[in-house]
Length: 177
Image (cartoon, rainbow, N blue to C red; front, side):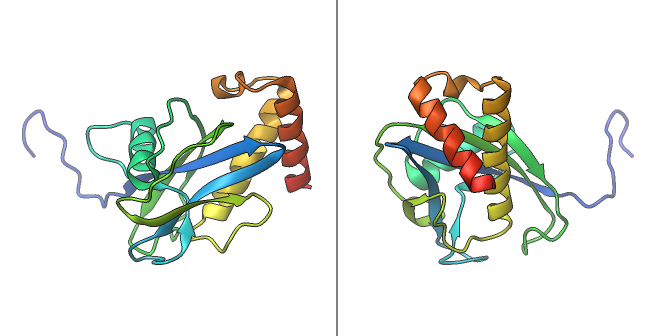
């Protein structure tokens, strides 16, 4: 062993991020998904996301991957979970950190990098999803339910009107019943 340096002979897991981006417009909650360009799950719908680079933290990775795959720039997101199921990714041991936010405006989207398509889907009419992304989405919706009921809102929800907050509460309650 080198002096002053720690070297371990243990396998290392990869770290990824997944972004659960909702758009609340006219009482409808849509979810942003990408169609994967490459295997695994080529041509399947998934959350925008990807591998953490050595020089970035989780939130920066989520923002970067979101921009690369959708063209969307998001400034504020909240971490909603960490996913460690041993077999969650067929490429090998992968741990994912999930982030979420809600926007209320129309945005221009452009598929790029690992995405061949990008599209909004109704939360109530999602396509078949890659990996464990349905679980990640469900837990993000639960995150909103808990925050709305407790009044402990993440910063990005402070810009919503009272009416929008009521709409969001009704939608998440209906989804989780």
